[in-house]
Length: 281
Image (cartoon, rainbow, N blue to C red; front, side, top):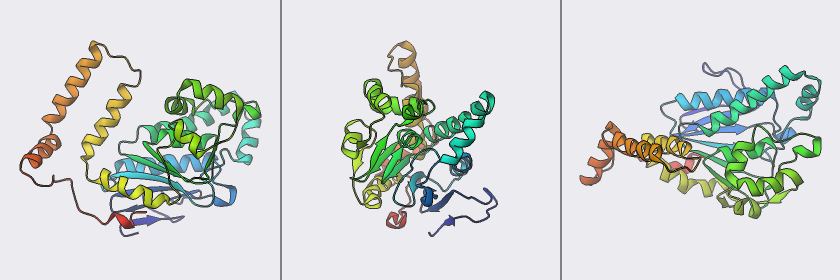
């Protein structure tokens, strides 16, 4: 890693991390689930550390996009068993606070101000599906498998449900949340959970990374807020006024002016910095 790399080391910004690692290379931030010995299962420590890394990269001026990936054979097997044992002994208020931490993680990823790419191998169960669906782009290997298994334990996929249902739709959500059946990468592709299947995740991500790095950082951030505003699908006068204001506002912004002038002057805009993205992952 040519810019910065931190793995289980003390840093001024984040301190010592136990269950995740992170790196920054050529504008590409990486958030890496790093509990391969337990299939990258979630617990309160991992959730807290992921929130911290997301916050770090959201503010880091050299980070242009984020890749979420995992070490080991599996992306994530969902909730850690020891964490689940703790939850079983918690009272309502403790469980509520615990759930709100996971909800913050999902929201922080969903509203991350830069493009996000999830690279998925092996099992992606429970909360892992929330991470995938909260990411902007997702690529999985052919043998990746997915499951919303909560009802088998007498629970529900509550915190992740807004993101999963948005991706696969309410009708498909009813089937897979009720049956808790496993489904494969081809099914995940049809359900819009992932965008592409490729056994070489890094190679598949490279052209996407290259395309994203060439785009306006402000433009991509505004696209994400625009789409979030339009999620309800309503097209009324408020929608028309909002979208008109957005395009007018970005045209007169510094970055909008730079992009338009660069186009007419047949030059690269000032945010475009040629980089060797082949070493980014």
